[in-house]
Image 1 (tube, helix red, strand yellow):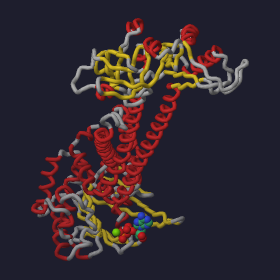
Image 2: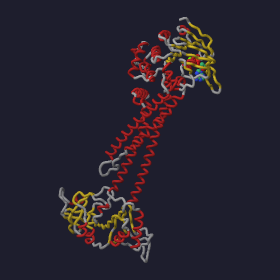
Image 3: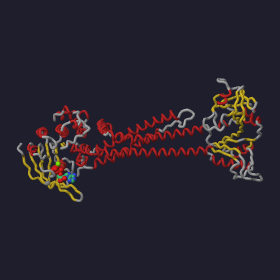
Image 4: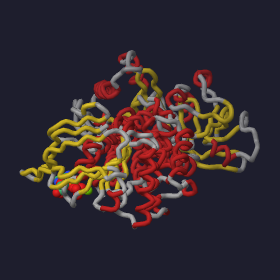
Length: 414
Length: 226
Ligand SMILES: Nc1ncnc2c1ncn2[C@@H]1O[C@H](COP(=O)(O)OP(=O)(O)O)[C@@H](O)[C@H]1O
Ligand SMILES: [Mg+2]
């Protein structure tokens, strides 16, 4: 170990590295490229993953959405093509039957209407909702509050509007809270303004009003357009989706094998697909990265082998002057380790630089395609250490070659 | 210093083997100045390489400084070379990317001497061979004679018991040959054993003892009276 801290050892290595500039550069580039690719690929994959996470971020990822369409199978005396609606009764039944599985359930009614404020107006989606919607898809409020239970109980004429509606209907710098807007000629007091998510957004720029208000104003009775359901932790969401659909089919006298009667989206399943894709990407990244690294290390070994052959004579001279095989080997291996270390560090630095540039160019603003493209330091350290260990092992081959022959044979080399 | 008894050496050539040294008996005492003569291919270099522990022998005994050389591993050989032997080659064998000073200092590095001290000692030896002013020149900036003097300084720097020189003047013109021989004589006068291979009579004549080899055996061994 002492030789490691000996300035002479490094002097010798410096001499030989400087002497062999060409192969030093090639070696460094080989390894640098490998670790650079690994860092950049892993970082980019992470950035994509973060991006997907952000897209789904505002949603509870274990959500199922259910709505009705029309039957495709005649059943119990009904013709096929029958249209029907979800009702409050369905919700009571589901809540009871699946009390262990269902965490949140939001029945929803939606329409689109002219919305007027003084002399400005626009057509927007109007949605009758329960406060629970805010728990399923977090609303980012920039003014005021979301709907609450009091609004539901009192069937209040209040609304929460999207930022764009606020901008379109209100003068600049006007506090919207407490102001009134007209929807279908009925005045609603604005209690909140929210910023819609840039990503998954089923509602568009909507005006949210209390579900109970919507029921009366639009005369919906106990009918429901659709519902969002989230599952409790640990529940098999696909199974829950199947079970709920079957229960609903029974309730509405729909054939159990009817494919069209109910529409549903299982967000968990969709995310699963993307996660699968991401896992594939990660696997590919690792595969490419590691293959490149190994190729880099072999390049080092190969180049060392060539240089050791080129330097056979020099090694013969050194041995004639009293260098032991161990000393010769140490020097070659140390050279290898030194080169891989420097190249690895440069690779990490350049990789980090590229990730930084990616972040600056692709990772900012609402349309970012890569978010926070980073790599785990432990992962890079492991890759780095593996690289250096491989560099050592591969350096041993030419080192061994250099010392198995008799010194005189080495000296005879021209 | 060097005692060789019934030494045999063959080189394998394909399936056959070439019998080069066929029973050499040679005894060289400390402080001798011996030259080996013989035609090309007579086995001079082979003998010197065995003496220098750069190559092994097949049969017979070899004692270096009283120690029987037997089953020597490369590590022990390296240490013995560093401690007892200094080499001078016909083709100089300097390391091309090191300066004259660094070349001379290299054996001391393997001896484990500190850099500062090493360069100091190396400089003294360069001074001794008259090349102090050339210390920081690379070998390709030196003439043949200068290179060989650097090589001699390198051979001497560890204060070896024996200096082995394989045709040290083979690549030099007559004036530089004389200066190199002068240097070897000086070294010998200081008490070092010097063992030179040559095929030039004038060179051999400047040594104290001439051993003639022919076809792998010693045919004569005479003192020159110097
Ligand atoms: N490594 C070797 N392998 C095979 N033959 C060799 C080897 N080294 C020397 N020889 C042969 O041994 C003989 C003696 O060589 P050498 O000792 O170099 O002679 P000298 O130095 O007297 O000219 C020559 O015929 C040479 O070809
Ligand atoms: Mg020869």
